[in-house]
Image (cartoon, rainbow, N blue to C red):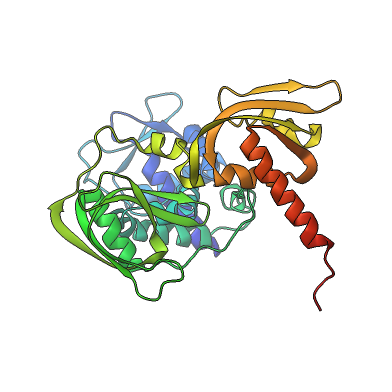
Length: 340
């Protein structure tokens, strides 16, 4: 980045900080705010900038106060400066990275110019600037094995999100797994979208049915928004729906789980409980006994299997038998000679 670019960005940000008279800001305060925005300059530089800018913009010094303050003239023309500061650019970039697939179409479209401005701003500062360097210091890592996200048709996503925001019905063509022709759903009532790992789901109801269903967004082949208003179940709460274990694939009623973990495998449960009412007891032999009432989901089974021999399930008996059967099958499979 050239020296002129750096100066322009600094002066642009400084102009945004100057209030309209009778309010004022001192040179020391401007230095602090510029430093907060990753522009570290001396008071002498700020004073020089202000004097140069005063020749172009309706700025005025207040020399009657100690220390001197600066203001926009009370009757000066209104002035608006587009663009974003470096910290704002950082926030917008993180927003785009983390929530890009969860924004409704109108919001996403409205923010595109801001995202582009953020990219330009970050592109004009060096990698050592703290706000830009922050992008290389933070990562969000999935608890499970990370997978590449499926490809979502942008047009379909926009139609679905638009109908959801407007509480309108949809007509969908949906590709079920291992089925050649998409299934037609003439009337779909969208309720919410939920992202689980790399997959985004549409929570919805079909036609006149009362049960709540989920559709993987990437499997929707075609979507048409209808004019009729969508309906929702009385008392439907998205957080309650997620907490019920629906996205872990519910296999039955909630269960009372009792399992013994090795210390190494289960110690994280002290800091990240399985549920708010879990009981974790240290055993004389060094293990940790867990008691918790949890949704009966396939995700729970997969989570337990992920600990290998670091956990033994004792209750419920059906879950213990299921996992024991899986362990026997795995032992048999691994005991076979390797395929050529």
